[in-house]
Amino acid sequence: MKIKIVLLSAVLSASLLSSCSKDPNPVKCDHEIVLQPGPDYGKDAMLFTERPTDNFGYSIDNQVVAWTWYALGFDDGAMRSMIEFDLSAIPANAAIKSARLTMYNNPNSSTCRGRHQSRSGSNAWQIERVLEPWGENTVTWNNQPKTSSSDIINVPESVSEHQDYEVDITSFVKGWYDRPSTNHGMLMRIRSEHYYRSIVFASSDHKDESIRPKLTIVYRK
Image (cartoon, rainbow, N blue to C red):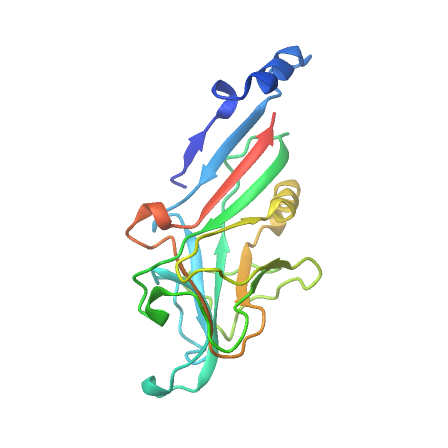
């Protein structure tokens, strides 16, 4: 995976540096790793009710939408998005302290003109932990994997049309790190899939690398 890794031990606050220097094992300091893969190594895909057997692993969008598509000959329906990060760059025997997912709005998306919208009610959305393997180039609405209903992360409605989101997913990442075989990523969906509600993000296939999905992890080792 093409990743950008930033080790914070050289730029930690004075108090943290002091605590590290007093640690019996001086390597136990906080470090940060940033995962923001591009098209070659990123894994994300959209799912669409109105084209239930089509794969959208190539899309530049991660759309979380409930809308109508009458002009295209479709009915009303929903779009969901899936994303999975490879955590193998985190060293063994580390302690995960925090993990934050950053999703950036794609202002140039053809869907909803790139805008988050809540015409008929709240566009609050949720992140569900995926329980089964899936392929970026094979997943569709019809074969989407099962998700967990016991540890859903609820995300509030947008406050602006082009808002970026940062979401705490520490609990997910801790579980995946401790049990790597369970890392099948996340599914994002509108909480109430009733049109007209939209959340429009860029995917790892977007040409602007600065707005691709990003996972920032702080660990201690």
